[in-house]
Image (cartoon, rainbow, N blue to C red; front, side):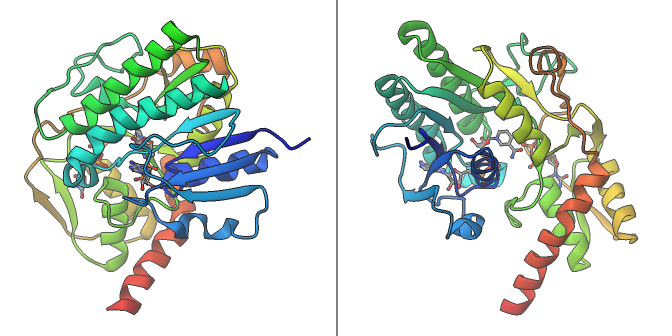
Length: 318
Ligand code: NAD
Ligand code: UDP
């Protein structure tokens, strides 16, 4: 009998492609879909001879049905602030119509369902570290709202399909995650600072760099997600690395890793940029026995070859 098919939306993206790899490594058959809005087929190029993997270019905002699936991982959505502000309406659409379309599929095929939610549901948090029971402090009309509110709508939709239709749903609230295949030019802090440092350019810090983030390496995140997908938990679970860094400390860590002292230039802080972010992962520890194992230093080291290749590709096109 053929192993039941697992659907991954956003498969050509940074996290979606790592998730496909992890599911294939577990022995599954995987169908990846993506509209390539922010992802790239280069992230799936290594799977071209993998007979258990199939890719279809699909925009999940239009209802679609490619046949029976046993599990759906819904990862489709622009994710970096630069991308989702450029693609504001598309982001609202994928987090509403796109999520509803994939939930309908889960209902139709009685498939399990895991949705990639985000720490952005907490907005600029007044509770620190962020626990799942905190409802958040989100500006519903500001520039980040196209992403934050779409993700909050998705959480409501996923919860409703569980409540009304008994779909076996899971919600992961992902905190800043990085690693190879993070788009080199998507404006996120790790990609920006590493690319700038490797190009020998000044490193850009928005505001005074005292705002904090907590950075999770991609393999840690995917391990937590696979455990959550198999659990009986239907309410949101934080998955992230609880070690908190100021953005300035993060820039210094990159400099120390590369053995450089690049110039730092300070630029205006974007509107509604959260002042702090740190997951409380008590729930993930208790429910899943999960915690991250890769430090920022180790994760940056593991990412270096990829970002060096990105800089080399830029220079060969220049
Ligand atoms: P990414 O941009 O690399 O991947 C997102 C993928 O979704 C892209 O390949 C894109 O083309 C695809 N996509 C967008 N709209 C689509 C549509 N309408 N139909 C089909 N495909 C579509 O970003 P990522 O960092 O890999 O994020 C993946 C998911 O994880 C997103 O849902 C994001 O919100 C969530 N997340 C990521 C982080 C992080 O730190 N990386 C943090 C919190 C949440
Ligand atoms: N940031 C920065 N310099 C950059 C890119 C980002 O100082 O070149 C800051 C940004 O203002 C934010 C933090 O780094 O405070 C994380 O930004 P990112 O875009 O990675 O994601 P966010 O967590 O804000 O969604």
